Length: 303
Image (cartoon, rainbow, N blue to C red):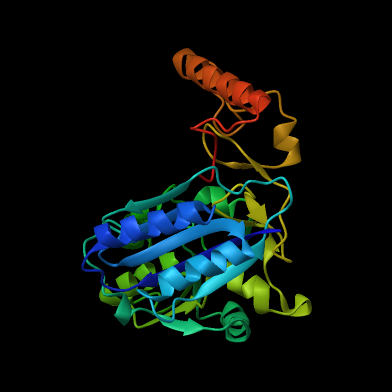
């Protein structure tokens, strides 16, 4: 069985280029797919492969990142997860776009049991730091959506919508915890008194909370070919639109505005003929590659 391994850690890297070359050699030798992001501030990755191969990769990572926390989940048979293995160097491992953030001065990490207490506290403002297309398929009850399309928009939303005097106690969550590391540190730097973050994000919550205590509603969007996972961390029911990357329910897949690889109800625009023509040609190349038993190099979401 192929499995999914996710991880991140904020840790200063003096030489990301040398580490990039080392990890590329290791990953290609182990038949692993997925993406690792490296920056001066640390590492962020999602990988797919056999458990043996992924544990071998862990050994390569542990040499540079001691105590790197890992999250494991299973991948359904026939789902590739990713089509290639990439190690990229970026300015940030998760892009907030406001310069250097001291994540060591971030919010207080809380476990699932205390998280449920925060959800019930009327004096705590609960914020879902994820993007709209993720929130659309699942979130915690009463959580506030910043209505962002990417994480770079979050600081602007904070400036326009939040006030430390009116919202002194804030709790936030995201998929795996990495966005909250930066978002919570950013809020504290803006003068908010008490900031909490769900330790390990939604994925850790679903892994550790008992079913009768689970407050999560819907499914959780993930950044690989599974698209979403349910409360049992099994592959969910959603597919994804290649054109706009929005997760799609069965009803949306049945819509006349859905065309595989081209459009969905969230992005359908019959007036944009050039774009539709280009996407249809790309989808034709994907189907031809599949018929040959190969993967088209631009294959699809989750790359």
